[in-house]
Length: 285
Length: 337
Image 1 (cartoon, each protein chain N blue to C red):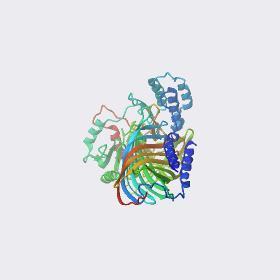
Image 2: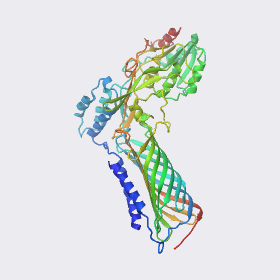
Image 3: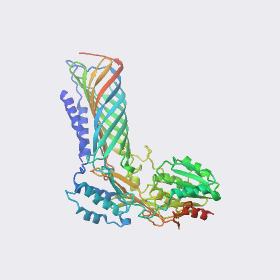
Image 4: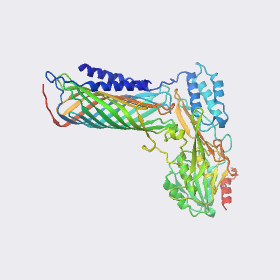
C-alpha cells in the first residue's frame, strides 16, 4: 500500500508539469543560457550509497557504499534526446554480518518534448526506455550466491530547468516513473527458473531451464514492478564545456510472491562533464 | 512560476527518501527469540520433507523455543538451532556461524564405512588397464579401457563443468566395448544439470523417472515430473552399464541415479547411497548465520523417496586388507563377463 501511495504521489507531481504552460510574454524575462541546439557528449561519475533487499536470501536488507558513472550523448533543441550507458557497483552488508555486492549495468534512451512555455523555466515531458541487468553476489550462499534481474522498462518522464543568476548556471530536475516492464528474475528458491515453474510443476533438470536472460520473463505493470528515478543537477553551461554536479536516485522494487520481495536502490552524487559540439546560440536579454 | 520548479525539486528530494517504504523491515539479528522465530519460520515455509523425515516441526519448535530467552548467548542459540537442523537427518541442511567457523550438518555416511579406497582402486586399475587413462572434467574424471574389452569411467564430482563435447569424446572412445562401468563412488554431487546431461547418453527412449516435489508454502507443494530424454546428437551407449555406488553418493549423483535407474540395461553395484535428492536453497539469518535447506525431494516411479538413500541391485563391500583388488569393481567386471 505504501509503495503504491508513493507511485501515485509521483504521478501527481508529474502531472503538475502538464499544467505548467503559460502565455506570459518574453518581455522582461531572462533567457536560459542555451536557446539554440546544443549537442554534447558527457560523462558523470561519483560515489554513492546503495540498499538492497532480496527476501529469497534474507528477510533483512543490506546497505552500503559504492559508486557509479554514466556516459552518453544528449541533444537539446526545443526537445530533448539522450542516449546513455551507465554502471553502478555497491558493497553492502547487513547489521548482523551478511554481505552482498551488487552490480548494475543500464542503457537508457530518453526523448522529451519541450512544453510551449515562455519565461525563465523550461519544461519537457516524454518517456524513456531503460534496459538494465543487476547482479547480486553473496559468496557464502552456495546455490543462492547470485541473483540476476533483467529488466526493460518503458517510463513516463519529465524534466525541468531554470537558469540561476547570470553566470550560465542551470538548476535542473528530472523524474521518471516506470509504467510497463519486462522482467526476468533468476531465482525461485534457488534456481535460474522463475518461481512459477516450481509452483506450476514445470521444473525439470532435463529441460533447458537456464540463466538465459530472455527466457521465461514476463511483462509487469507499475504496481507490480516499480522503477522510479529522480535527478537533480546544477550545471554551468560554458562555450565548449558544461560541468557541474548531479544527484541521482533510482529504486527498482518487485514483489512476485510471498517472501519474494526484491528492492534495489541507489543514491549517487556525481561530477558531470560535457563536451559540446555543433552548437548554434541565440541569446537575448 | 519559480515556485513551481522549487516545489518540484523539493518533491524530488522527498521521493529520494522514500526508498525505505519499499523495503520490508525484518529482524535486526540482536534478539535471540527473534532469530529463533526467523529460523523456525523459514524452515516451516521452505523445508520440503518434514513428513518423509517424520519430524513434527511445530512441536519441535515449541519445545525448543522454551529454551531461548533474551539472555541466551550466541553459542547457546547456535547449539539449539543446530540440534533442530540435525533432527532432520538431511545432509543438504546445515547452519553455519561464519564468525566462529562453526557448522552444524548431518553426516551422510551415518557412521557406515565409506566402501571406497582410491589407492586400492588405482592399484587394481593399473593391473587390468589395456589403454592409457584419459582425464576429463578438468581432471576430476577419467576413463580407460580395461581387460575383457570393458570401459571404465570414474566421475568423482559433478561440481565441475561437463561439456557435451567431453561426453561425446569419452563415449566415442569407448563405443566398441562390450560393457561400461561408471564409478560414482565418493561423488558427493554438484550440478544436477551435468548429471542429467550424462544420463541422456545412456537411454534410447524418453523415460519418466519420477517427480520432484517442491515446497511452495508452509503447507503447499507442487510436483514437477522428471524425464530422461535421449541425447539429441544420437550418441547413446546401449550395451550393459554398471554403476558403482557408496554412501558418499549424494545430491547430483542421486539425480544421476534416478535418471538412469529406469533404464533396462543399467545395474547398480556397491552399497547404499547417502541420498540427498532435494534441491537446496541458502540464505542469511538476520544475525549473519548462513542456513541451507532442502526445498524439494525426489520420488521415483515406484513411489520411493530417495533422500535417505538408494539401495544398489547387488550389495558388495570392499575388503581394505586386500590392497590390489577393489571387490566392488571386480564384481562389476564379473557381471559383465
